[in-house]
Image (cartoon, rainbow, N blue to C red):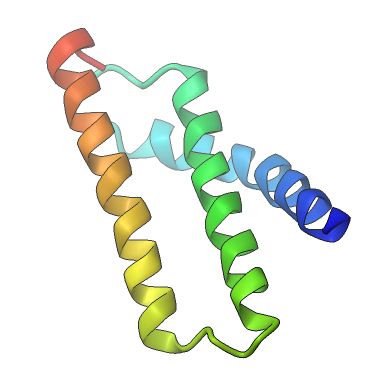
Length: 90
């Protein structure tokens, strides 16, 4: 169980700079988002990777399940970003 915690921390920590770069590059006409949004998005990425690794143990993970799991996480993040843009403007 400890390996999943370490995997989560490792993926979250290494994906923060990449996601910060993508958020800074593709913000469009809106101001760049605050740093905590990049941290939240990297935590989503880490949760996805850790969940896929956990589902791989009993050999339950397949391509369709991985795709729909990523789609669910992306939809949640899109709705959160739309709400933040509406309320706060970033």
